[in-house]
Amino acid sequence: MFSRPKLQERKKRQVNGVRGHTKLEVRCGKKVCPLTYQKGTYLGKDDLRKPKGVSPLPWRISMHEYAVTKSIIDTVTKEAEQINANRITVITLAIGDLSTILDESVQMYFDIISEGTLAEGAKLVFKRIPAMFRCRSCGKEFPKPGRGFDCPECGNLGYPTGAGKEFYIESIEVE
Amino acid sequence: MEVKIMKNILGANKTLAEENRRYFKDKHITAVNVMASPGAGKTSVILKLIHSLKDEVNIGVIEGDIASSIDAEKIEKLGIAVIQVNTGGGCHLDANMIKASVESLCLKSDTLLFIENVGNLVCPSAFDLGEGIRMVVASVPEGHDKPFKYISMFEAADVIILNKVDLMPYMDFDRESFYKGVRALNDRAPVFEVSCRTGQGMDELVQWVRQACR
Image 1 (cartoon, each protein chain N blue to C red):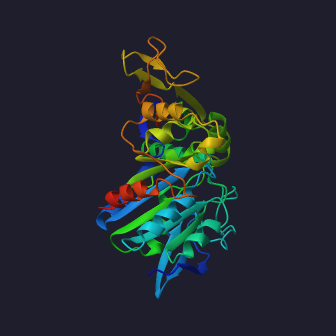
Image 2: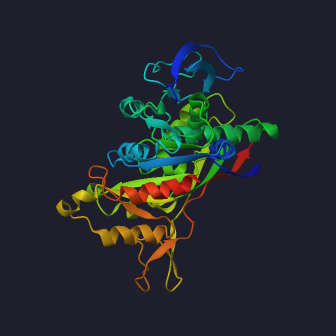
Image 3: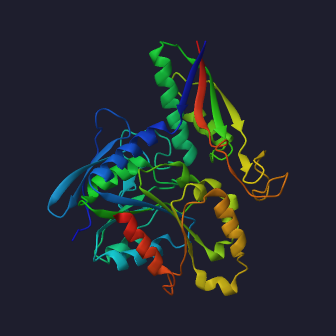
């Protein structure tokens, strides 16, 4: 039978020089295992304090758009570095209507997190892609109606075609 | 100068999720990502399944919650390996949290691992954890319109549970409309009507999970 792992020790130090990584150890029976965790991830109710060396952002809050925006900035800055760009001026995102993302929220996080990176000051362009359905009877493609999934032509049931789930960085413009 | 990128925004999560998936496969761990709105009965379903299956298979649980260890304590009482992940306001679990939790749970091979996601029908659907089974729990008091509102959640489900069916006589739950919505999005996931309170329908669900572990 297992015993519940207990947070054994809290070592406030940076791992591999990566900001926001904290090294912990947990005890599981007699075995002590290392536990590496990142910003926004912590384990145990006694571990709610902000570790040293992480950014002043609300680090515990890994709200959806925060995580997403962080990922966008990491990707585009890496791309820009590879081609020795000085700065990124435009970032174009393709976001389907089924992808559970709010543009305004991404923009808000972007303004904060992009500070000091190659992406600082870049314009975010949100290309919205509507959710499409296809009728199971007549095959007609139609944008998701406000209510239900019924085909506007024949009234039969539609299914999602996949359009509307897009969630990628299309392009960047750099100087 | 314009540079084409065409990269998935959640690519980093996806990569970690695939690592988890490989780990689970190598160790014969059946990972079940349990998703639902708050109060639909995620913990109750997990507890019922633990009761029925704990003598047959090793079980581990990762409890995701915004705060508190209420659910983890319920599971710990049954002598099951459990780890609490508090997201501290975060609306979903991600693959990195699962990776860290799995390492610290010291799971044996041939384990049934329940991952209870944060109560939310939106965000968890976007973050792959590397799970083998996506279990969505709906409940009668929430209403029959949930599949029409939370498309991605029901579309990606491998199994759907309709909980609290004992309340059906007291609610205006339109079963036909619920199934119409579910089947429009997903014609492969079995739907189990259960009541965790009375035990109704649980045998069929237990049987399905037992099969899925093999």
